[in-house]
Length: 194
Image (tube, rainbow, N blue to C red; front, top):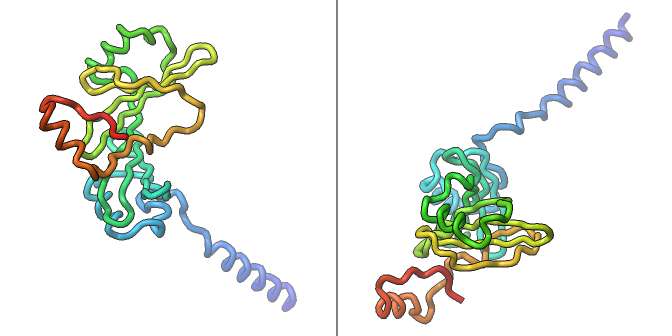
């Protein structure tokens, strides 16, 4: 009897120790990988997206990127990990929710009969917002970049790799190009600087 009692106590202690380390990993209020970014970056993110859910941080090149859900959609926000400055947010958009000028331009354009695969909105600090409509027809895939006024500004062959849009992050204006363009062409919209 004493042996059975000792065996019971041993298994009870083992079970208690084993299961005490378990926790609720599905808590969407606690961002994942916050150790990758500074408190300043987290504060800048929280100020810009106070109601964000399921936040996951990662480092991509020279940027701290937060993937999250907010305002009914999926987003990725790019921050400078040192200065905590926000640069860009990529947002998944439903085709039918595109701005009317973009919808009208696409429907009237030469890619209207191509199947729409994905739509993203790129909101960038100090630069034109872009809408990217990924289309495919047969074996061909294209990314169509539209301004918010419906101008098709760029067509890029989609290579099939996951797109980060890091080529569209605002770049430092070391040579004062933006000021020169704004002075010479006050109504110009700057989409990209190379």
